[in-house]
Length: 296
Image 1 (tube, rainbow, N blue to C red):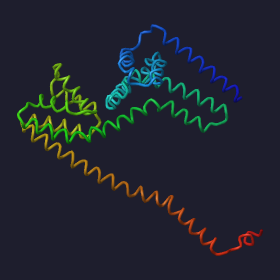
Image 2 (cartoon, helix red, strand yellow; image 1 turned 90 degrees about the vertical axis):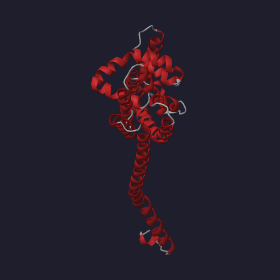
Image 3 (cartoon, rainbow, N blue to C red; image 1 turned 60 degrees about the vertical axis):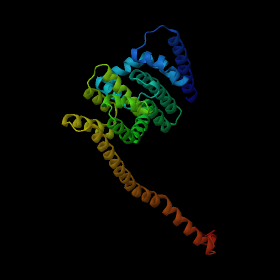
Image 4 (cartoon, helix red, strand yellow; image 1 turned 180 degrees about the vertical axis):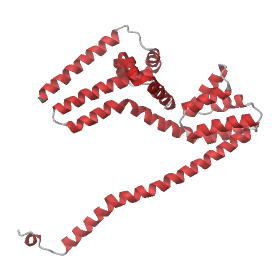
């Protein structure tokens, strides 16, 4: 039975390889999002990732239809919040999900046939969540980088605005001196404003692309200051101070949560291990004849 399952898996692998080669050579029309990502992002992704994208690109429209418009929009928003890691788009995500899903399903069936059903659960989990793992990790790292950069950026921006430059020119000047995800977000916002998008709408799009509470706080305070006519430099300094205060509160909150976790780890692992060592030491030091006690 195991040999039959392995033979089936080998046959499917060979068929998939031939199908991938045929698709690679075929002049098939790619979805717009995926074609652009494969051309522009070819130097930013590894060869295996690019091969996976090409192998699953024909199934991307089917995956998107199965997801439904609402889930597709939500996933596209999360990809934007992650900063399109490695040139990832919604079509490339769907292509990878199709490949990982088929691989996980085939591996799970093979493992069940081989008598290891426990490992089949891991295979199914890989097929279901492998495509999302990159997005989750990128979202977390991007959010942390933006929140570390934002307060210092606002301080510098306030100084430049106080020197006499307009807000638009100051934003452009300061963003050129920074690198990283926050600078990328600002360049997108500036390009939108250059194309005729209003400042309010451009910053609303900035808020939508980021899940950071500090970015939302920045956009809200900026819009309120504009409506009330408050000096922009004072508004920026106040936002930076509020963000630092929020960071300090979050750090204290994380530290408070660490204490119960440390106590739980101590009670579960260290205390029983210490008791076992003490009891064993007492028995070994008492010169007790364990053979007579056990009736040996």
